[in-house]
Image 1: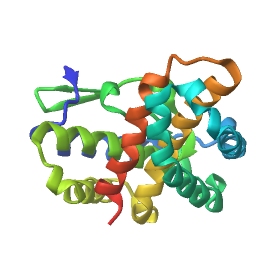
Image 2: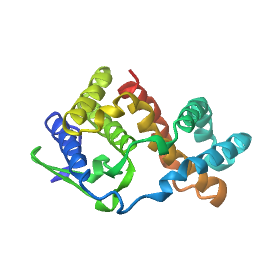
Image 3: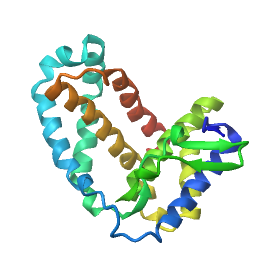
Amino acid sequence: GEHYNGNNASFQKVTKIIAKTSQLLLKYPMRHKVNKKIFKKFDDTKKIIKIMSQKSKNWKKYFGKKNSNILKLYWPKILEIHNHLEKNKVKKKILAPIHTDMHPHNLLVNRNKDVLILDPDSIMVAPVGEALAYAGLKLCRQHIVKNKLQKSAEKIGNKYIDIINKYYSEGKKFSQDYYYLSLSYVLERLVNIFRLNIFKRNKKWNNFLLMQLKHIDEAEKIFKN
């Protein structure tokens, strides 16, 4: 097979398989592979966001001139997203066995019929909404770009949600929150980049900073109705 590339034939098929696989995983015992670290991530995120705000005048030193200028433009949105997520703690979310990293490179499609989900180590007890919303952001984005459907982004996002709700029994419980749920994972990845720079002077992931920031705009077009 080939990695999911977002073509018309595979979008609905892949989304259906994700939903049905997630439904099947509900039968997996909750006591196994509980991701305890995920309950601590918001406390850590709060700490990193605070340090980033304090060091805003030195961002150029960490991220370079271009990245720091772009980061300044997105910072109000990052703070708004963080504040919203902070008020809606991850502990309140629906927990179940779920694949937590269903991005296009972990999805193989064979002639638009057979779908294989890679990286079984990413299956764990975790917040279901965040996992499915982030997968939706990545899949819808790929589908929109591949087929030049930028003007139909909201329609594509709603289609993804409808398919998830049809084949996954827990889907409707969080279908109104896909915007912030998808950005929970985006924020986590941004915070990892911030952390590496601030504490380890590690700049190797700075090339991915712009992509993660653009996900904020993409999530707004796809899921913020």
